[in-house]
Length: 223
Ligand code: B16
Ligand code: MG
Image (cartoon, rainbow, N blue to C red; front, side, top):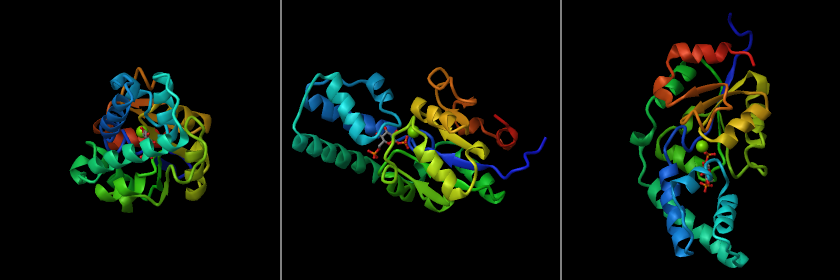
């Protein structure tokens, strides 16, 4: 059965369009080690979809450390500078497999597309990988006050695209992001580890698994 509404698509950025988690990992690891705090892939997983401020708060909590506000701000600046040094070396080669095909299909078929990311660097990253023009609207960490799993970032996207949340489809790689989409009654599509993203309506390892037929299934899905 065909959907009677034109569905809209909202993409998370880090972990969905590009694999910047590995750069966050390197920068947070260096920071944590400078404070004698253990930081492994396991901790990094828990920072996915989490804002920069909240990430540093979590790391300090794990290490049982308290620091001054000035030091906190200096560390955040330093972390971001290191992160951006990796980001600035990115190009369209860094777009994850299958993403471009999906974006092209949606564009060619006039589906509204927005970005919904916790990152304050989202615009810079989209420019680096030459995808900026695909998005009608970008909602990022500069525009939201409530972090995922609060649905604010996705609801803002829906508002800008002028679609009801229940007529929107979200691609996410973080548990908090899937919960945010579910909290807003949107169709949630997990990209990555199914055991971590088990609350999603649909799960795929990567966009390489998302063919035109799969997109049609997502479009016609009713929650
Ligand atoms: P920034 P997403 C999130 O992006 C990342 O998953 C998370 O690890 C990062 O801490 C957060 O953005 C803030 O990023 O330091 O660039 O502002 O997955 O919501 O696109
Ligand atoms: Mg993400």
